[in-house]
Length: 195
Image (cartoon, rainbow, N blue to C red; front, side, top):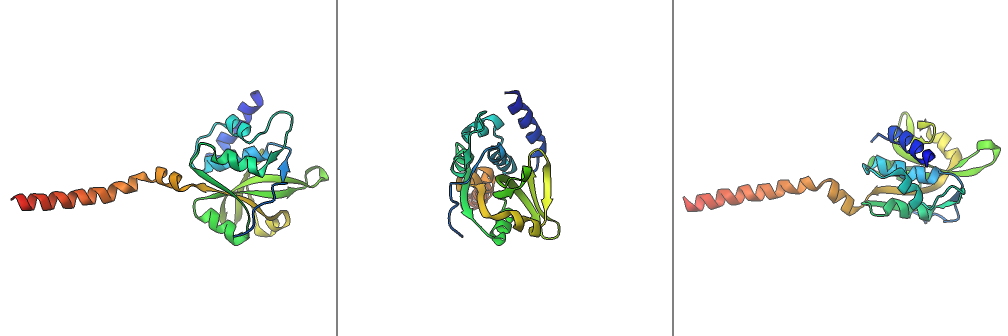
């Protein structure tokens, strides 16, 4: 439990930032990288999830059980105004996703301990000159050049963005403007006809 609290606190600090075939769901992870990426994605979209809840919703527990892409997607969408779509995409699609207020969880190949394993990281931004920015525990924000990313990523991605209802919820105030305009026009017409 203390580990969850500590990781939650660290990620709260770190994340105060603001088409193709489906992914083969045989990709699984034996670390917390999937749940951590899901948590980072939600925080980046303005959600305020409880870290431990996200970990549990991803199906992870202390026995180092595996986290599948399907479990990550379900955890992202559970009771939230978020859409999570697993797809194999290109760099062009990744750029578009990051440019349209979305984030992307990339399934990358990690060579930690000289054993190739799959690793999930949340990409939050890109700059054509500097590269892609992602958050990876425990390193925090990292910039990676496209040439480096090509070596570790085959396109396997979970696209995460606000759902239609989520966009409406976060931008409801834009609906006030047309109603105010109609009200003003109605009042002007009503008062002119009465006087």
